[in-house]
Image (cartoon, rainbow, N blue to C red; front, top):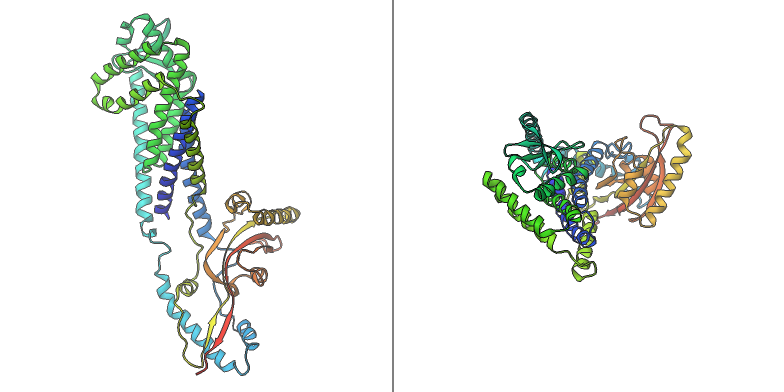
Length: 469
């Protein structure tokens, strides 16, 4: 399950990246900030994987109330079979004995069947996930400690009539998140006063927009999923959007993009002289920033329309992409029965095909006896909404009893006779696509019922054939 969640999150992350690219282009045309588009995309990618893991945890711990596995109900089977033919009791007894033999023989085989082909990697992937997150968090902590040590070496100064902290070669930058202070390298104080005004204004705009807090929040999101390549790409685009939004705000006050661009190039050259890594990583972003300062998409244009359309399509695809789910736990005999190939019965032996269903459900919990009418109304409403085409997942997220560890689906074919009595009665005359609501005894207090709204996904009805030589 861990592997499928990781693949699902990465795929959805790239879909959100495509959507954010389209929305950013539209935002640039409208002249609005775009950094929050990328922050939202990162948050959505992490949230979707968390919800997928929660669904797996809730769905794998508990199958529907009182579903404990298939049972050999000879009396029930005999009652149904008796009406089909005369003088069949001996054949039925023989068949039921053989069926019990099959049940015992397949137990050992079915117990060794993995639920999914990726489950064997769950433990190593989870360990790798935790270790990589710990490493990223440790790197952030070490960076914070180094920054605190660096601040002790800074000296107060003045630039453009503002109080700043002066360093040897660190900056321009901000120290702090909510009450940030400007840190400038000593060589900035040697620039003309007009250039100092622009540098200080740039950092003040970062502080006013709480950009350091946005960047740190994005780094924390990456620390939760350091294996997610899409998340790293979203982080890089967020950093670019933060700088581009700041450039746009600064240009509103200075108004001279030519002077501002030349200053950015000059400061970039001084930075490159100290760090080849910064030179390699920052060249493309600087070029993009300058292009955005000198050109702006027209609001009414084919490119903006296509970008908006691509954003809508990508968001829809990300929303519609089904989250990975684990099928509910079954007993070995039920798993083997679902996988068993049909056998050709010998002469004079009945071929028995039990009624088998797959379904998904929303279980609505009640707190006490006074809460029963409310739960019954909710069950009726949920059933109506499902018939009207409302998404099952949306209703399950709002109404399903996840705290009670109730499963939302039974996707492995399950004999109706092995279900609780309430399920048997509700499914008796139902067909695939039917939506039924009923009540079941509470798991802790049977006198306080729970209400179930079930949608049957498939139904294979009980059949009985007799081969005559």
